[in-house]
Image 1 (cartoon, rainbow, N blue to C red):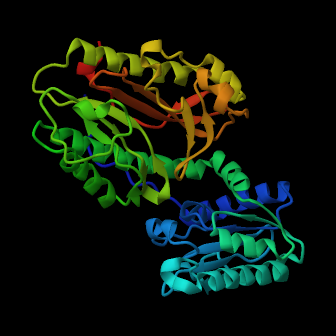
Image 2 (image 1 turned 90 degrees about the horizontal axis):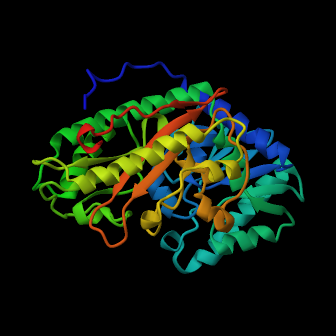
Image 3 (image 1 turned 90 degrees about the vertical axis):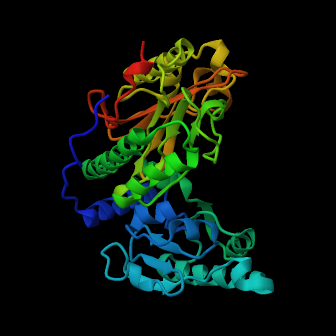
Length: 404
Protein backbone atom coordinates (compact mmCIF):
# COMPACT_ATOMS: atom_id res chain seq x y z
CA UNK A 1 0.00 0.00 0.00
CA UNK A 2 1.37 3.41 -0.97
CA UNK A 3 0.49 6.85 0.35
CA UNK A 4 0.15 10.01 -1.76
CA UNK A 5 3.27 12.02 -2.47
CA UNK A 6 1.60 15.13 -1.09
CA UNK A 7 -1.60 17.12 -0.83
CA UNK A 8 -3.80 17.13 -3.94
CA UNK A 9 -3.28 19.99 -6.34
CA UNK A 10 -5.63 22.92 -5.79
CA UNK A 11 -8.31 23.15 -8.48
CA UNK A 12 -10.03 26.43 -9.22
CA UNK A 13 -13.78 25.97 -8.76
CA UNK A 14 -16.38 28.67 -9.40
CA UNK A 15 -18.66 27.80 -6.49
CA UNK A 16 -21.12 30.56 -7.45
CA UNK A 17 -21.55 29.11 -10.94
CA UNK A 18 -22.01 25.63 -9.44
CA UNK A 19 -24.76 26.91 -7.12
CA UNK A 20 -26.48 28.77 -9.95
CA UNK A 21 -26.45 25.58 -12.06
CA UNK A 22 -27.95 23.56 -9.23
CA UNK A 23 -30.73 26.09 -8.74
CA UNK A 24 -31.56 25.95 -12.46
CA UNK A 25 -31.69 22.16 -12.29
CA UNK A 26 -34.13 22.27 -9.37
CA UNK A 27 -36.34 24.75 -11.19
CA UNK A 28 -36.41 22.55 -14.28
CA UNK A 29 -37.62 19.62 -12.17
CA UNK A 30 -40.23 21.82 -10.50
CA UNK A 31 -41.53 23.10 -13.84
CA UNK A 32 -41.77 19.58 -15.26
CA UNK A 33 -44.12 18.76 -12.36
CA UNK A 34 -46.06 22.07 -12.49
CA UNK A 35 -44.80 22.99 -9.02
CA UNK A 36 -45.01 26.76 -8.54
CA UNK A 37 -42.67 26.96 -5.54
CA UNK A 38 -40.90 24.85 -2.93
CA UNK A 39 -40.28 25.54 0.74
CA UNK A 40 -37.02 23.82 1.68
CA UNK A 41 -36.11 23.08 5.29
CA UNK A 42 -33.45 20.36 4.81
CA UNK A 43 -30.04 21.94 5.39
CA UNK A 44 -28.34 20.02 2.57
CA UNK A 45 -31.11 20.74 0.07
CA UNK A 46 -30.96 24.43 0.96
CA UNK A 47 -27.24 24.40 0.24
CA UNK A 48 -27.84 22.53 -3.01
CA UNK A 49 -30.39 25.07 -4.20
CA UNK A 50 -28.80 28.29 -2.93
CA UNK A 51 -25.15 27.60 -2.13
CA UNK A 52 -25.67 28.93 1.41
CA UNK A 53 -24.44 27.20 4.56
CA UNK A 54 -25.43 27.98 8.14
CA UNK A 55 -25.19 25.63 11.14
CA UNK A 56 -26.36 22.60 9.20
CA UNK A 57 -26.48 20.16 12.11
CA UNK A 58 -28.18 22.69 14.41
CA UNK A 59 -30.82 23.70 11.87
CA UNK A 60 -31.46 20.07 10.97
CA UNK A 61 -32.90 19.45 14.44
CA UNK A 62 -34.55 22.81 15.20
CA UNK A 63 -37.83 23.08 13.26
CA UNK A 64 -38.19 26.08 10.98
CA UNK A 65 -35.00 27.67 12.27
CA UNK A 66 -33.89 28.14 8.65
CA UNK A 67 -35.76 27.65 5.38
CA UNK A 68 -35.87 28.82 1.77
CA UNK A 69 -38.71 29.81 -0.55
CA UNK A 70 -37.79 28.99 -4.14
CA UNK A 71 -40.33 29.73 -6.88
CA UNK A 72 -40.16 28.11 -10.27
CA UNK A 73 -39.66 31.61 -11.62
CA UNK A 74 -38.86 34.69 -9.60
CA UNK A 75 -36.94 35.80 -6.55
CA UNK A 76 -35.62 33.38 -3.94
CA UNK A 77 -36.33 34.32 -0.32
CA UNK A 78 -33.98 32.90 2.32
CA UNK A 79 -35.24 32.79 5.91
CA UNK A 80 -32.17 32.81 8.15
CA UNK A 81 -31.88 32.05 11.86
CA UNK A 82 -31.92 35.08 14.13
CA UNK A 83 -28.72 37.09 13.85
CA UNK A 84 -27.36 35.28 10.79
CA UNK A 85 -29.02 37.12 7.88
CA UNK A 86 -25.63 38.38 6.72
CA UNK A 87 -24.64 34.86 5.64
CA UNK A 88 -27.02 34.94 2.66
CA UNK A 89 -26.72 38.58 1.66
CA UNK A 90 -25.24 39.57 -1.68
CA UNK A 91 -25.53 36.15 -3.32
CA UNK A 92 -26.71 35.71 -6.91
CA UNK A 93 -28.84 32.73 -5.83
CA UNK A 94 -30.75 34.63 -3.09
CA UNK A 95 -32.62 37.85 -3.84
CA UNK A 96 -34.10 38.55 -0.40
CA UNK A 97 -33.23 37.60 3.17
CA UNK A 98 -35.76 37.52 6.00
CA UNK A 99 -35.65 36.33 9.60
CA UNK A 100 -36.90 32.79 10.20
CA UNK A 101 -39.85 32.22 12.50
CA UNK A 102 -38.50 29.27 14.51
CA UNK A 103 -41.43 26.95 15.08
CA UNK A 104 -40.04 24.78 17.85
CA UNK A 105 -41.29 24.15 21.36
CA UNK A 106 -37.91 25.25 22.71
CA UNK A 107 -38.30 28.64 21.02
CA UNK A 108 -42.04 29.12 21.55
CA UNK A 109 -42.94 27.14 24.66
CA UNK A 110 -46.67 26.95 25.24
CA UNK A 111 -47.22 29.38 22.35
CA UNK A 112 -46.03 26.81 19.82
CA UNK A 113 -49.43 26.41 18.14
CA UNK A 114 -49.78 30.12 17.46
CA UNK A 115 -46.20 30.32 16.19
CA UNK A 116 -46.95 27.47 13.79
CA UNK A 117 -50.03 29.30 12.56
CA UNK A 118 -48.00 32.47 12.15
CA UNK A 119 -45.37 30.54 10.18
CA UNK A 120 -48.08 29.18 7.89
CA UNK A 121 -49.52 32.68 7.46
CA UNK A 122 -46.09 34.01 6.48
CA UNK A 123 -45.68 31.29 3.89
CA UNK A 124 -49.21 31.60 2.57
CA UNK A 125 -48.89 35.36 2.11
CA UNK A 126 -45.64 34.90 0.20
CA UNK A 127 -46.98 32.10 -2.00
CA UNK A 128 -50.10 34.09 -2.88
CA UNK A 129 -48.03 37.20 -3.59
CA UNK A 130 -45.49 35.44 -5.81
CA UNK A 131 -47.44 32.51 -7.27
CA UNK A 132 -51.11 33.34 -6.84
CA UNK A 133 -53.92 31.65 -4.88
CA UNK A 134 -54.34 27.92 -5.33
CA UNK A 135 -50.67 27.43 -6.18
CA UNK A 136 -49.02 24.02 -6.18
CA UNK A 137 -46.20 24.05 -3.64
CA UNK A 138 -43.64 21.48 -2.58
CA UNK A 139 -42.92 21.32 1.14
CA UNK A 140 -40.22 19.50 3.10
CA UNK A 141 -40.32 18.47 6.76
CA UNK A 142 -42.24 20.88 9.00
CA UNK A 143 -44.14 20.46 12.26
CA UNK A 144 -47.52 18.73 11.94
CA UNK A 145 -49.20 21.87 13.28
CA UNK A 146 -47.48 24.06 10.70
CA UNK A 147 -48.33 21.67 7.86
CA UNK A 148 -51.96 21.48 8.94
CA UNK A 149 -52.21 25.27 9.14
CA UNK A 150 -50.64 25.73 5.71
CA UNK A 151 -53.02 23.21 4.15
CA UNK A 152 -55.92 25.45 5.14
CA UNK A 153 -55.05 28.14 2.58
CA UNK A 154 -56.26 26.25 -0.46
CA UNK A 155 -52.90 25.32 -1.95
CA UNK A 156 -52.09 22.01 -3.59
CA UNK A 157 -49.32 20.71 -1.33
CA UNK A 158 -46.91 18.04 -2.55
CA UNK A 159 -43.69 16.59 -1.20
CA UNK A 160 -40.64 18.58 -2.31
CA UNK A 161 -38.39 15.50 -2.12
CA UNK A 162 -39.10 14.30 -5.66
CA UNK A 163 -38.00 17.39 -7.62
CA UNK A 164 -35.03 17.99 -5.33
CA UNK A 165 -33.74 14.40 -5.49
CA UNK A 166 -34.19 14.21 -9.26
CA UNK A 167 -32.33 17.50 -9.67
CA UNK A 168 -29.47 16.26 -7.50
CA UNK A 169 -29.16 12.87 -9.23
CA UNK A 170 -27.13 13.83 -12.34
CA UNK A 171 -24.05 16.01 -11.80
CA UNK A 172 -22.50 18.69 -13.96
CA UNK A 173 -18.79 18.53 -14.80
CA UNK A 174 -18.19 21.27 -12.22
CA UNK A 175 -20.00 19.27 -9.54
CA UNK A 176 -17.83 16.25 -10.31
CA UNK A 177 -14.78 18.49 -9.87
CA UNK A 178 -16.11 19.39 -6.41
CA UNK A 179 -16.62 15.70 -5.62
CA UNK A 180 -13.06 14.89 -6.67
CA UNK A 181 -11.73 17.65 -4.42
CA UNK A 182 -13.75 16.28 -1.51
CA UNK A 183 -12.48 12.76 -2.13
CA UNK A 184 -8.84 13.80 -2.35
CA UNK A 185 -9.06 15.60 0.99
CA UNK A 186 -10.78 12.62 2.58
CA UNK A 187 -8.23 10.19 1.20
CA UNK A 188 -5.39 12.26 2.66
CA UNK A 189 -7.13 12.15 6.04
CA UNK A 190 -7.57 8.39 5.76
CA UNK A 191 -3.86 7.92 5.00
CA UNK A 192 -3.07 9.82 8.20
CA UNK A 193 -5.47 7.66 10.17
CA UNK A 194 -4.20 4.47 8.55
CA UNK A 195 -0.63 5.33 9.55
CA UNK A 196 -1.72 5.80 13.18
CA UNK A 197 -3.31 2.35 13.61
CA UNK A 198 -1.92 0.37 16.51
CA UNK A 199 -3.42 -1.97 19.07
CA UNK A 200 -4.25 -0.22 22.33
CA UNK A 201 -5.88 2.83 20.80
CA UNK A 202 -9.63 3.19 21.25
CA UNK A 203 -11.91 3.45 18.25
CA UNK A 204 -12.63 7.05 19.27
CA UNK A 205 -8.94 7.93 19.38
CA UNK A 206 -8.30 6.49 15.93
CA UNK A 207 -11.40 8.08 14.43
CA UNK A 208 -10.46 11.48 15.89
CA UNK A 209 -7.27 11.49 13.80
CA UNK A 210 -9.32 11.14 10.62
CA UNK A 211 -11.79 13.73 11.86
CA UNK A 212 -9.08 16.29 12.61
CA UNK A 213 -7.47 15.97 9.18
CA UNK A 214 -10.66 16.05 7.14
CA UNK A 215 -12.05 19.08 8.98
CA UNK A 216 -8.72 20.88 8.65
CA UNK A 217 -8.96 20.32 4.88
CA UNK A 218 -12.30 22.15 4.72
CA UNK A 219 -14.95 19.47 5.19
CA UNK A 220 -18.23 20.36 6.90
CA UNK A 221 -18.84 17.38 9.16
CA UNK A 222 -18.93 13.58 9.30
CA UNK A 223 -22.47 12.26 9.08
CA UNK A 224 -22.00 8.95 10.90
CA UNK A 225 -19.72 7.26 13.45
CA UNK A 226 -18.75 4.12 11.58
CA UNK A 227 -15.22 3.14 12.58
CA UNK A 228 -15.26 -0.14 14.49
CA UNK A 229 -12.76 -2.83 15.43
CA UNK A 230 -12.78 -6.54 16.18
CA UNK A 231 -16.12 -7.83 17.45
CA UNK A 232 -17.63 -4.40 16.81
CA UNK A 233 -17.30 -4.98 13.06
CA UNK A 234 -20.01 -7.70 13.02
CA UNK A 235 -22.81 -6.90 12.59
CA UNK A 236 -22.25 -3.60 10.81
CA UNK A 237 -23.68 -0.27 12.03
CA UNK A 238 -22.16 -0.37 15.49
CA UNK A 239 -20.95 3.11 16.38
CA UNK A 240 -17.42 4.28 17.12
CA UNK A 241 -16.82 4.02 20.88
CA UNK A 242 -14.20 3.75 23.59
CA UNK A 243 -13.70 0.09 22.67
CA UNK A 244 -9.99 -0.71 22.69
CA UNK A 245 -8.50 -2.00 19.42
CA UNK A 246 -6.93 -5.38 20.10
CA UNK A 247 -3.99 -6.99 18.32
CA UNK A 248 -4.57 -8.56 14.89
CA UNK A 249 -8.22 -7.53 14.61
CA UNK A 250 -9.97 -6.02 11.62
CA UNK A 251 -10.86 -2.32 11.63
CA UNK A 252 -13.72 -1.37 9.30
CA UNK A 253 -14.49 2.22 8.36
CA UNK A 254 -17.06 4.13 6.28
CA UNK A 255 -16.07 7.77 5.66
CA UNK A 256 -19.51 9.45 5.22
CA UNK A 257 -17.92 12.91 5.03
CA UNK A 258 -19.93 15.96 4.03
CA UNK A 259 -16.74 17.30 2.61
CA UNK A 260 -15.04 20.06 0.67
CA UNK A 261 -17.52 22.34 -1.13
CA UNK A 262 -20.31 20.45 0.65
CA UNK A 263 -19.93 17.31 -1.48
CA UNK A 264 -20.08 13.85 0.01
CA UNK A 265 -17.02 11.67 0.16
CA UNK A 266 -18.26 8.14 0.74
CA UNK A 267 -16.03 5.10 0.48
CA UNK A 268 -15.20 2.28 2.89
CA UNK A 269 -12.09 0.35 3.74
CA UNK A 270 -11.12 -2.39 6.18
CA UNK A 271 -7.66 -2.57 7.78
CA UNK A 272 -5.73 -5.06 9.89
CA UNK A 273 -4.39 -3.89 13.25
CA UNK A 274 -1.29 -6.13 13.29
CA UNK A 275 1.31 -6.83 14.49
CA UNK A 276 1.00 -10.30 12.93
CA UNK A 277 -0.31 -11.18 9.49
CA UNK A 278 -4.06 -11.47 8.87
CA UNK A 279 -5.67 -14.85 9.40
CA UNK A 280 -6.94 -16.99 6.54
CA UNK A 281 -10.55 -16.17 7.51
CA UNK A 282 -9.87 -12.43 7.58
CA UNK A 283 -8.38 -12.67 4.08
CA UNK A 284 -11.34 -14.73 2.90
CA UNK A 285 -13.88 -12.19 4.14
CA UNK A 286 -11.92 -9.34 2.59
CA UNK A 287 -11.54 -11.05 -0.78
CA UNK A 288 -15.28 -11.82 -0.94
CA UNK A 289 -16.16 -8.17 -0.25
CA UNK A 290 -13.55 -7.07 -2.81
CA UNK A 291 -15.11 -9.41 -5.38
CA UNK A 292 -18.61 -8.08 -4.72
CA UNK A 293 -17.61 -4.43 -5.17
CA UNK A 294 -15.66 -5.04 -8.35
CA UNK A 295 -18.28 -7.33 -9.90
CA UNK A 296 -20.97 -4.69 -9.37
CA UNK A 297 -18.77 -1.91 -10.70
CA UNK A 298 -18.35 -4.00 -13.83
CA UNK A 299 -22.09 -4.45 -14.22
CA UNK A 300 -23.10 -0.78 -14.19
CA UNK A 301 -23.66 0.91 -17.54
CA UNK A 302 -25.50 4.03 -18.73
CA UNK A 303 -29.05 3.27 -19.84
CA UNK A 304 -29.36 0.27 -17.52
CA UNK A 305 -32.55 0.11 -15.46
CA UNK A 306 -32.44 -0.28 -11.70
CA UNK A 307 -34.18 -3.64 -12.02
CA UNK A 308 -31.68 -4.82 -14.62
CA UNK A 309 -28.82 -3.85 -12.32
CA UNK A 310 -30.45 -5.75 -9.47
CA UNK A 311 -30.69 -8.85 -11.65
CA UNK A 312 -27.07 -8.67 -12.82
CA UNK A 313 -25.53 -7.66 -9.50
CA UNK A 314 -23.41 -10.05 -7.46
CA UNK A 315 -25.35 -12.75 -5.62
CA UNK A 316 -24.59 -12.81 -1.90
CA UNK A 317 -23.57 -16.22 -0.60
CA UNK A 318 -26.27 -17.52 1.72
CA UNK A 319 -23.98 -17.59 4.76
CA UNK A 320 -23.58 -13.79 4.60
CA UNK A 321 -27.12 -12.82 3.57
CA UNK A 322 -28.40 -12.39 7.11
CA UNK A 323 -26.00 -9.54 7.85
CA UNK A 324 -25.95 -8.03 4.36
CA UNK A 325 -25.73 -4.29 3.80
CA UNK A 326 -29.20 -2.96 3.13
CA UNK A 327 -28.26 -1.70 -0.35
CA UNK A 328 -26.17 -2.91 -3.25
CA UNK A 329 -25.45 0.65 -4.40
CA UNK A 330 -26.80 4.17 -3.95
CA UNK A 331 -26.59 7.66 -5.37
CA UNK A 332 -24.25 10.18 -3.83
CA UNK A 333 -23.73 13.91 -4.25
CA UNK A 334 -23.93 16.36 -1.38
CA UNK A 335 -25.01 13.39 0.78
CA UNK A 336 -26.34 9.93 0.04
CA UNK A 337 -29.20 10.39 -2.41
CA UNK A 338 -31.42 8.96 -5.16
CA UNK A 339 -31.32 6.28 -6.42
CA UNK A 340 -31.19 3.31 -4.08
CA UNK A 341 -30.19 0.11 -5.90
CA UNK A 342 -31.24 -3.02 -4.03
CA UNK A 343 -29.91 -6.56 -3.88
CA UNK A 344 -31.77 -8.96 -6.14
CA UNK A 345 -33.31 -10.74 -3.15
CA UNK A 346 -34.69 -7.43 -1.81
CA UNK A 347 -35.86 -5.86 -5.06
CA UNK A 348 -39.39 -7.29 -4.98
CA UNK A 349 -39.98 -5.94 -1.48
CA UNK A 350 -38.16 -2.59 -1.58
CA UNK A 351 -36.94 -1.84 -5.07
CA UNK A 352 -38.24 0.67 -7.58
CA UNK A 353 -37.32 1.11 -11.21
CA UNK A 354 -35.57 3.91 -13.02
CA UNK A 355 -32.62 4.42 -15.33
CA UNK A 356 -28.91 4.83 -14.58
CA UNK A 357 -27.82 7.87 -16.61
CA UNK A 358 -24.51 9.63 -17.32
CA UNK A 359 -23.65 12.14 -14.63
CA UNK A 360 -24.90 9.98 -11.79
CA UNK A 361 -22.37 9.39 -9.06
CA UNK A 362 -22.89 6.11 -7.21
CA UNK A 363 -21.43 4.24 -4.26
CA UNK A 364 -20.98 0.49 -4.69
CA UNK A 365 -21.40 -1.21 -1.32
CA UNK A 366 -20.27 -4.41 0.32
CA UNK A 367 -20.47 -5.72 3.84
CA UNK A 368 -19.39 -9.33 4.41
CA UNK A 369 -19.90 -10.72 7.90
CA UNK A 370 -21.42 -14.07 8.81
CA UNK A 371 -24.08 -14.01 11.55
CA UNK A 372 -22.57 -15.46 14.71
CA UNK A 373 -18.97 -14.80 13.71
CA UNK A 374 -16.77 -12.16 15.31
CA UNK A 375 -15.61 -9.98 12.43
CA UNK A 376 -16.85 -8.47 9.18
CA UNK A 377 -15.44 -6.48 6.27
CA UNK A 378 -16.84 -3.23 4.87
CA UNK A 379 -15.68 -2.05 1.42
CA UNK A 380 -17.16 0.60 -0.85
CA UNK A 381 -16.16 2.58 -3.93
CA UNK A 382 -17.48 5.85 -5.35
CA UNK A 383 -17.91 6.03 -9.14
CA UNK A 384 -19.13 8.34 -11.90
CA UNK A 385 -21.40 7.03 -14.66
CA UNK A 386 -20.14 8.28 -18.03
CA UNK A 387 -21.47 8.09 -21.59
CA UNK A 388 -19.46 4.94 -22.19
CA UNK A 389 -19.31 3.23 -18.78
CA UNK A 390 -17.98 4.26 -15.39
CA UNK A 391 -15.04 6.18 -13.94
CA UNK A 392 -13.64 5.33 -10.52
CA UNK A 393 -13.62 8.45 -8.34
CA UNK A 394 -12.31 7.07 -5.03
CA UNK A 395 -8.60 6.31 -5.21
CA UNK A 396 -7.68 4.95 -1.79
CA UNK A 397 -5.84 1.62 -2.21
CA UNK A 398 -6.97 -1.72 -0.89
CA UNK A 399 -4.89 -3.69 1.63
CA UNK A 400 -2.31 -5.93 -0.03
CA UNK A 401 -1.92 -8.11 3.04
CA UNK A 402 -5.67 -8.83 3.15
CA UNK A 403 -5.94 -9.79 -0.51
CA UNK A 404 -5.12 -13.44 -1.36
